[in-house]
Image 1: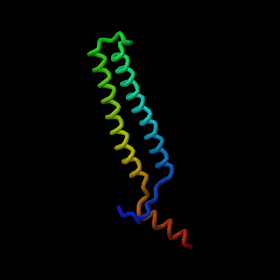
Image 2: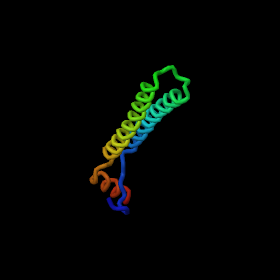
Image 3: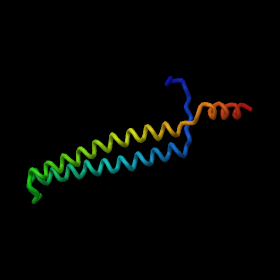
Length: 99
């Protein structure tokens, strides 16, 4: 893609892609928060959980957060690309604007 190229998008589809990505980011953030809370609880001894299980659970939630982050980035790119208007629609709109 060239830097001087103007790409037009379906505004509603692009907005939905952004909303979905934001919600998915909130989920990924919450999974990371859970991982941190479990880790802190086990590390400080506040948790009654076996330390090995606690560290494994913390690692699992952290891995889930990372995986979900990768997923949300991939989905966002796919959804934004799907919102892209075809070249023919872009040229039709630009000719209508000129008249």
